[in-house]
Amino acid sequence: RSAPLVLGIETSCDETGIGIVRGDTLLANAIASSMDEHARYGGVVPEVAARAHVEALRPTLDRALADAGVAYDDLDAIAVTSGPGLSGALMVGVSAAKALAISLDKPLYAVNHLVGHVGADVLRTGDEHDPIEFPTVALLVSGGHTSLLLARDLVSDVELLGETIDDAAGEAFDKVARVLGLPYPGGPQIDRVAASGNPKAIRFPRGLTLPKDMAKHRYDFSFSGLKTAVARWVERAQDAGEEVPVADVAASFREAVADVLIGKAIAACRDTGVPRLLLGGGVVANARVRELAVERAAAAGIELRIPPLSLCTDNGAMIAALGAQLIMAGYKPSGVGFGADSTLPV
Ligand code: KG4
Ligand code: ZN
Image (cartoon, rainbow, N blue to C red):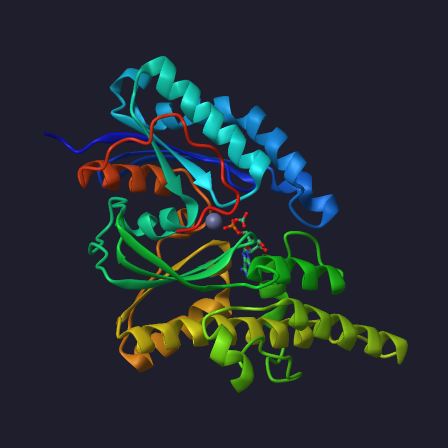
């Protein structure tokens, strides 16, 4: 029997993603983003994102099918993100997936968005690529989530080690960019400006790394204190009539975020004895995050895996890939009785 042909639907945040895979082979990864519509608000507006999904779904579906060269009838199954994410946004994808599954009479698999990010790395994109091995630690950092996972097995044993207790890392980048007068989304802007700054110019706080916090929050993250510290620093400079050294502030802030993210991820590998680290989420685009990950993983003897960026940011292919893995592992479909769950645990 050939590997299952699966269509995956992702609408948990501001990307409408439709992916098509055959087993672990990527056939299509169509994306529509409503990012531009959120720009004037400085962050993702849930209501706007949900409405944009409704508009983008049909054309994105058509594009994915055309890219993969398959028809609806060819599909073996449909997979959809049922959570975690924005409720209204999730509901659009879940409803569309149910409608497709019922009308085409195809099995439907509800999958977890975070586990989907880990599953992205099983995909073969045509290049040389060793299969991902388990167990692995996974650090998932985007505008919507910041989570540290231990995946002993992709389909049956994924554990949440820790997550942000306030802002997501990408959200912190976007908020600090605003403080510095940079446009949304702020992550790429800060990254660009930071390249010419001194990361040691200002020592910004590393959230939840003090000994008293580490006992309870060893693998958790906090970025709201850092964001406030940057805002205060900039305000003080402005009040004093000084010119704000934007590049130095951006570089010092980026350093604080990258240091905590990679520091805790490497600690999780060490503590669990798992010598593998997978990165996922849009913040993986960050030059300093990548650089520190490469340096510290090499120093600790940890195998680092960074999927291509198109599979790191939110996408439907990773959801299809996880659906295919569930099918190949013999899992039963979810039926159509499940709902969107904004806080779905892994
Ligand atoms: O995974 P993603 O595309 O999906 C959502 O969260 O919707 O991540 C987007 C986030 C944004 O917060 C953006 O500012 C951040 O990832 N980001 C970056 C960089 N590129 C994107 N953050 C830091 N450095 C970057 N180069
Ligand atoms: Zn995501």
